[in-house]
Length: 293
Image (tube, rainbow, N blue to C red; front, side, top):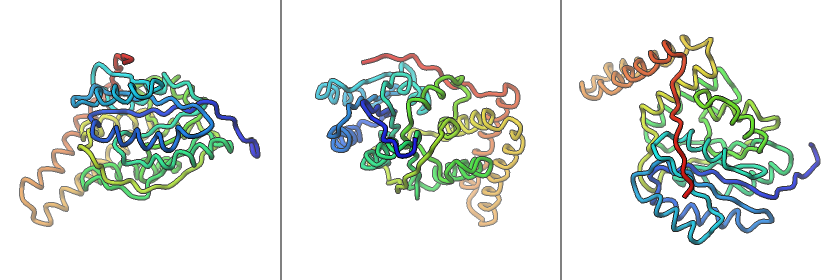
């Protein structure tokens, strides 16, 4: 495909939403400025993961101004990855962009990513140079992705969420059992040619991250079972050692009992989650009921 410029008729944009009412209008404005002014059609697919704020009302207002906007609604909260998968099932584009609704990923990169797709790359990954997520979230995420990078070097060390993928990759991902899908890995496994673009992940402007510690633990355990079944015990031990090291560090620094308890609770949460993995060999990913609004 070298030297051939692929024709683009329709690009899909999948945006998982959970309590993002504050950032949705600005995100929509940025998307309009960057992708609605080009020589291809666009479908915006917002997937509301049963938000408890007025995100749905904001989305309906956006759709009132642009009838080509699609709103999918989960009747129960299922998590970011199931929301993305719901959007991918609906997507009809030649390629699909996955971007978060929290404004931490720059929509201004989208034209460049589409340009790389047109040059023959079937996956374009936006890799983070830095994270501004707070110490606890940043530590957990960095540790998780560093471990994954150690065993699978094609995974960026700081991970990624923002990506453009070809419809062929979507078809392969959707064939997989939902509970085995670790999306970032599956995209790279299915891609024949991958390009990367760098960006600096900015601080969240509105609200707080809903990607809670317990959800991260369950997703991490599920991903490890799916990806490294023969390395499960090794990864368990490595992760627990890392967290226990944090506890020992706090103790050596003579911090209070309350602060010392934080890493201890994290260890207990991980043990509880991964004990389920040992006995069931998987952590079930919720299968949401979907409504189109």
